[in-house]
Amino acid sequence: MVLAPESTTGEHETLRRSLEELLKLMLVVWCKENQAIKMVSASSNETDKTIVVRRKSGEFGFRIHGSKPVVVSAIEPDTPAESSGLEVGDIVLAVNGISVLDKSHSEVVKIAHAGSDILTLEVARTSGVLSPSSADVHGGEPLYCGYLWKLGGYASGAPSKKWVRRWFTLKKDNCLYYYKTDVDKQPVGAMMLMGYEIIRSDDSSSQQPFQIDLRKPGVPTLHIAADTEAAAARWLEVLYTAAEKSQMADTWLEQTRRNLTVAPDEIPKPDCFGYLIKLGSQWKSWSRRYCVLKDACLYFYHDASAKSAFGVACLHGYRVQPSASGSKKHGFEIIPSDSSQKHFYFYTECDIDRKRWVAALEYSIDRWLKVG
Image (cartoon, rainbow, N blue to C red; front, side, top):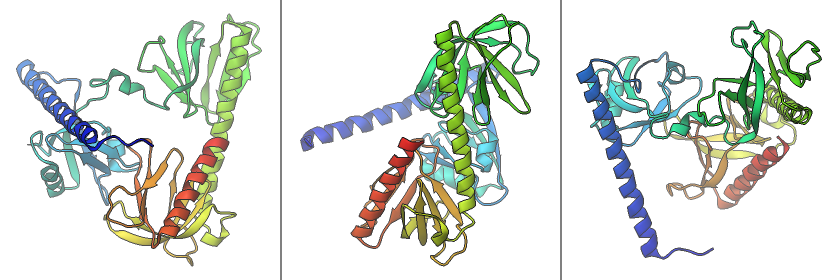
């Protein structure tokens, strides 16, 4: 490994901070310009949204980052924030009627917690504005893509006789997206392939001889067709594989749920087990937990004698690294590839234990990626 000279590293850090400050300034100018246009024209801007988050119990379920302005940096799954329509990247303009564009992070948090269980947020939506391609990040890079014919009327459930040409993209999330053209960033439709049957159509009356049907009970059939026999065969292959993987994932999720109800010593052939000290996400305090690692899933128990797990972290797509905070001597982090997912912090009572857990986590996650 070649290390950069200290002077070069310092220059890079200074440049990074300068660029961050410049971006923040641009965001503030953009927000204020939109507000001014809104006042002059007396009409709402399509990037401005009013979001109402109703807390039922516990937290609202989102985190903010930065100061002047603050930006929504993460949204917890199955929380009021997720169902409210709030999005990662939203710039918070006002909280409960109070402008916070020029407020620091701590001031915004104080204003939010001073209100009731109903939080009204005025936000500027940056999705598709700062980066037009950001609207098309679902599933990452495509596994396979190309033009296909699609029988119209799928969304209404009453297929017409009109075939339209669409750009189809199958991505790593096993979801099939289709666009009007190959240069569009926003899909006109998408379908997760879990539970679908992929078959070659034998409809001799069809205008398209190389037709493929995607069928699922209770859902209108999606009829697509390729231009050639070779293209149809290739699409059949990739779609069948994706549907099979989705079914495997569904089975795996069901097995994961069942494992929550068993004692730690009843999970067969775990990849690693023992005590870890975990940082809680709600109260930000450290707690000693008995943990069992199995197939890139980390199950949490109150202690080794517990009869069932109180939680599980599904770590597919995560990576492991030593803790960057330095506050805990034998610490490590489990970091998601998607910033909207949960970030985990742990430490062990000795370095041998830390190395054991890090090696096991890396092995378990990597093995699942190769098998899945």
